[in-house]
Length: 84
Image (cartoon, rainbow, N blue to C red; front, side):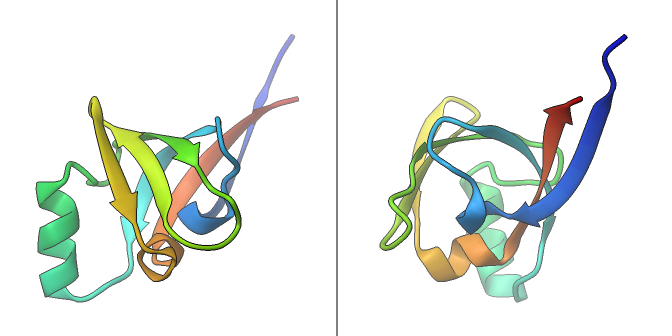
């Protein structure tokens, strides 16, 4: 029997190739509006296409590639699903 263990972290800490679910956005109203218009809403599935550990991240959300600054990515709380 396989169980799933979920943990939360920020999008900035997710490695290239991993898929996560966006849980919460911890930013002000202006940036929240921008991110929402890009498809980054709670519950959205996000795949990290590029994260070198510095500089911008490139993610795939709702079929669109989005570049995010590292500061923005640190404010996006995501859920990682790990099978145990």
